[in-house]
Amino acid sequence: MRSVRKAPTGPDEERLVRLVAGGDRAAFEELYRRTAPWPAVRLRRRCADEQIVAEVMRETYLAVWRAAGAFAGAAVGGSAVGWLWTIAARRLVDAFRRRAHHAEPPPAAARPVAPAAEDEALAATVGGDVGDALRRLAPELREVLQAMALDGLTVRETSVLLGVPEGTVKTHARRARTEMRKALA
Image (cartoon, rainbow, N blue to C red):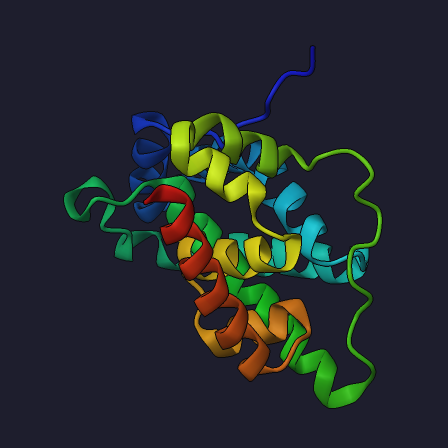
């Protein structure tokens, strides 16, 4: 039986972000130690170029250090890990945009033989009828739904992230919503 790797979450990470906002380097190091493996895995699922993943990770944690004071946290229904992932996802889109201006887009992740850890975590957290409906979606529809609904990316950001035209993203999002409605009706 495989263990499902879940995102670290909880009041400890939120407390660490608050300490980082006060300039606490030890708290920053602890936050990095606890949280860095999870976004790195998610970034690698979206980008096979290790150089870009490393760059995005550096930019993400630099942004966390600089903007920790802006973290609103549980007061607005957010979590430290969710906030951190939002930063990472946007930095990845920015990296793709920079690369698109200078060269060919980075190769897509082409290794998934076994289910991804995040897919397993999603399946474990989204159970019942909704989980079943998500698992029945075609992979391209599930990717778009995940990027837009779970990661909070815009159509344009999803287009850049997945390397497909914006019109395709819109079509896949509409088809995913329709199929989810039918499955849950």
